[in-house]
Length: 206
Image 1 (cartoon, rainbow, N blue to C red):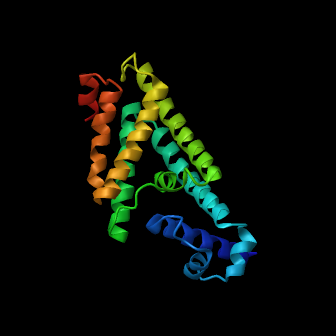
Image 2: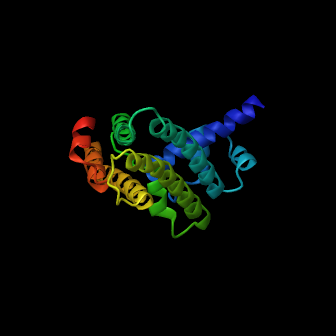
Image 3: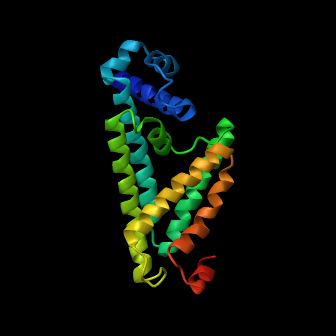
């Protein structure tokens, strides 16, 4: 059982790295297995298709990321501080990736949405679910910010959360395009404006 599980993990790790580097469409099962160091038969023991593998990579990546988001957004700090922590962690992930690989990899979900949303309905639907879950997590924090007077009373919490997720994805895409993680530095200022945060609250958090 240990060897079987190890082979599956090797395939998943290889697929995640290759998808991050080159995208999904250009990859073949043989290449994934070669990088993983497992026989091709092992692939079909665990996954019925390359798309099934991609779905598993997506699910496991989100499980890890969701735990991080919940930790950052569910802490004891003020709502605005928690949002800022999320932005800073997102920027740091892109900086760390650039230091290791020489390029900004971007967001796995955003990259796959751009590549596959018109080609693979199952993957498109799963990515939509993940983005909706991200919006849910941020909406809770926006509601807290409104209730504590840190965000404008006229702010639509759901739409604000949707816009914040869209800005994260857009800024990560720019960082990837320009190979410059500093593109994410504007997230915080844009968020303050979007949430209509009063000047005194901005000064306190800065």
